[in-house]
Length: 446
Image (tube, rainbow, N blue to C red; front, side, top):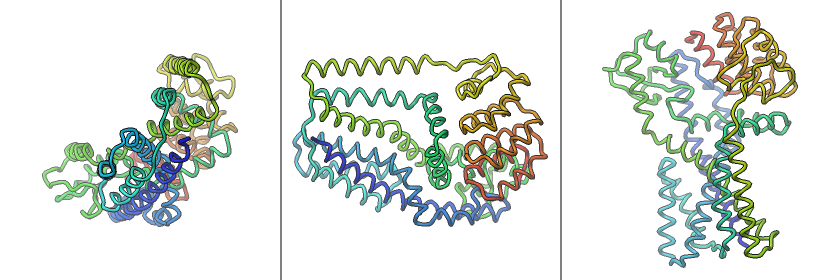
């Protein structure tokens, strides 16, 4: 019925978002490379290395990195455009009003994502075409009711962290899931930096009129703030009267509070938690429209059944608490290990620690992930060798990251050469980020 116009709108939304993401990532990556070069010139070891950035600026790499935005922001554009056309058609508004609405929506998204003439033209071309050309057929009662109900349920489900863990662990056990995770880490550097507030990035660069003293530099370095010698490549320029680490830290936190990057981050989260469920809901409605031919009373019964089932699901998720494990772990059970990690009261005996060490050799990457995380709560020098082996050889990036974190918690500086060698070797960008943080935790200031 109205499946065809929605598909047309959504495909166009994906295309427009991919074009926007490509140019935005290319512009950001060039600025990011300049910052990495400034860090290297100031004596730091940046992540990723400046030379590695050339691989991320290639056309293919930028297109693949843009997929992250295509399937998040792209859903937002598609759903907003579909809903706008639906309302404009129902109200029978004239073309001048439709054109004005298209300009308003395009300008809003352009300002939200960081205004540029190219973005405004791209968005206006998309929303203008959709609102002026595409018409949406009439929708009936049961579809409107489900449209309002199902997204609410799905958003609540998505916001439950426990459910996310289960999906991730399931994916990691499949070859396809491992490929998806590897793809994300291979092409995520620019995307991850772009959507992360500056204070939380891998490196925030500052420039001051009066050079920062070495001890203050070291203090700032442990908090991810780098003082560089070139003003052009710095994220933030500070006046010369700020000389101590805490003063500079306060200025950086104030600066990051109102940056447009936070709006972009909120938009991404909105897209993931709101637009995607709405899009999925539309497909559900299309299926009901074609496959379920029921009377008015049957539709009401259907809505009540869906609402009851949704209520049970929500109650089940809200009532689930992390179990406090008081025993060992006799079998490979991801839930038991995860619950031990997130519980407030943990058993800390030798038997439990040895069980986690055994699980680092499991065939299930989800088990290895949580075992490495658990060993960070049970630091022992006997963990060092197997954690170093996992950090070096495990095929899953997330597991290597957790093993590196557990190594750094030991507080043993003898692991610094090993971590340095991995930092300068061929590793995923995300793993190198964990390596750099681990080295900082051990007092390294290279």
